Length: 193
Image 1 (tube, rainbow, N blue to C red):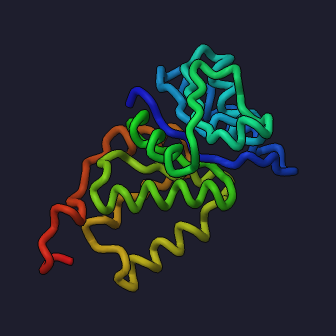
Image 2 (cartoon, one colour; image 1 turned 90 degrees about the horizontal axis):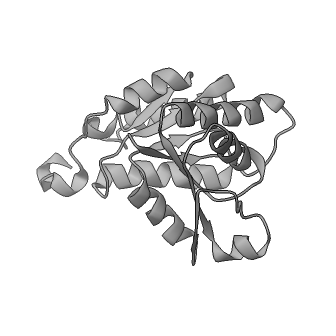
Image 3 (cartoon, one colour; image 1 turned 90 degrees about the vertical axis):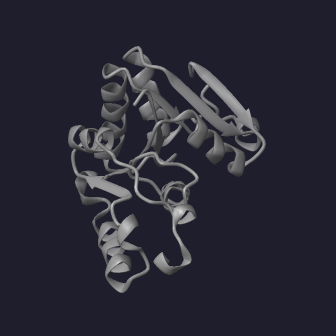
């Protein structure tokens, strides 16, 4: 994996563990020679990931919609800052530029990015690993809900392993590196669906 898209919040939570986590992810990826593709902002966890990766000598590619550039949240310190028209182009660029996806704690935008990466993998728009870093138990309920969707039958057996969830970054990166693509919906016959 040469580059990973990192999805995370643009907010700064009161609990400092989340900002520390984001910075550690940025440093770790840079030390491993893995470039960061992220939302291009300088605030919150996004800014912490990018800043730490840059300080550690890593490559950081920011992808930001024009509307956010004009509201002055763009991180102009990135190795490369790509300005796009809208969120749809942003997410397409994340997929095009990265070899996988890592989701850190975040809010609605982070959830949108995570579920789209999973959905696109399930359909067959990409065959890249989708990682979820469940640090501090932040995603315990989301992981439980994903298991519920599996148990009820809304996630097919072939797609149950798309979301790779781990509590520790090193283990998550190991599992993502060992990722084996599944059979996407586009390759299935109607009887398999």
